[in-house]
Image (cartoon, rainbow over all chains, first blue to last red; front, side, top):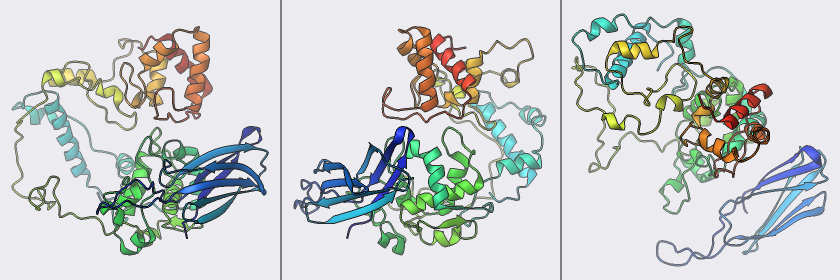
Length: 104
Length: 367
């Protein structure tokens, strides 16, 4: 089981909700070799989805070029204080993780 | 340093540093130097000692009472720290990341395994930190970078708690205080990772510096064995202008040649008699008092771009436009125009003063 994400969702001026997410993931590219010369198998996030009150506000496809423990910022219009923002990812080994934050 | 400071010790140190300053100023060691130095300085007042003596020792001696929660720390972090360190302490742009690279197993063992891993991408603050007092003391005395010592004691506890929470060292509802610092010290990932048994350089496995105190056969006379050559004096721009404008210590004015005598040095450092001082523009005074010059040299790039370069960039457009743009840049900070290093928002500076500064930069007469 992967470590929990850290999510901050804040209502800014003009009704825009800014969301910042830190995903804890090793993001192994599949091109790196270990000490004995063997290739370290790829292990990275593939799909990211963010929903606000059940409605999808962002989808993204991640690949091996994204860094370890990626940080992602995005914003959307219409959020209100107390609403839930939920972010999920799934990786190429079938691991999944969903975390939720309240807009403040 | 313990809190009970012997005033005589302090005075002796002040004299020692004055001696060092004179040596650095290029003065030969005169025979009459001690007599001259005897007239220098005065005993520090208890209030001065109190303001100076803020350090926290590894055994937490010197830690002022107070407490702060992780939640409060998050508020302070987002207002004061996030700009440079990132929301989650992860930013690698201005400084190395604060958080990351530690595991639950590290917290158990007290040794950070990632420090030995050649593939670890970076060494973060929490990976290296062996003593919690260091983190607390550093935030207390030096952060935020543009307004050191401006955080309340409770907020220093709160920010420390927030950083520890980011590293999963304390839970999200934790309240850090002077009472439980020692307990949290026992959870630091690298608490057992510090050794004193190593050298600055590799000297066949033996330390080249033995940290044992030497309290006898101290040298009684100072012999100068090397000095900075005259041509190298100004190699890094005017050091005096690059110091942060806090406390009483400034660098030497390296734009001027070294004073040859003690009298010349004293005359330069004495406050100018009224009416004789060259007129300083309002802009320069503000730039000094708000520590703009800590990051922006007038003619040279430091952390941020040189003021002269900024002036040139905005010189093409009408001055009113330039002033308007500069006001926005100063007030809200930003990154990208001059590189990746962000400038923190300076919204604590009053509007009138921001306008004066913007006008000063747009005018380009930096005196």
